[in-house]
Image 1 (cartoon, helix red, strand yellow):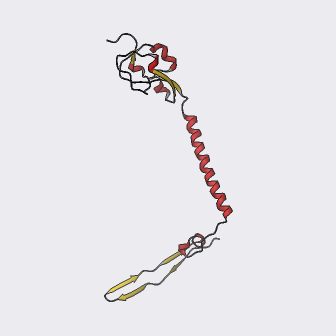
Image 2: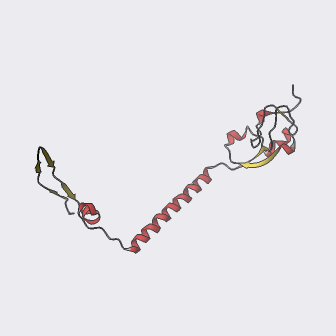
Image 3: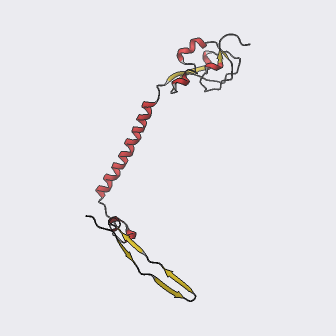
Length: 154
């Protein structure tokens, strides 16, 4: 069976200094097996570890961190939806202007498929060629189908 911890208690001490009585309470030193091996403050000796073991443990720790980082990146890439080709405004478009091919360019964007229905994708471009801008579109924003209309403005 393992070594049982023991308690070393110094007796209660009282010191009279003039009118002041200073009391020192007992000091307990609890030493357990771990305290005797590695804790300098508990009176035990400092545990010495061989340099080869220390280097091995350090390399193993770094390796675990790197593997965990790569695993998180891999899981993130696997759970992201595939990128969609979406039309993005290359300049500010004001309401009432017509959409020309020079007003947008196609970029790959990873977005939720439910939100992708709101944006003009590369396959939707023929339907929106020459459409009128109903609401202002800022440079860099994806072209939103709600902000475009075919036909003559009122």
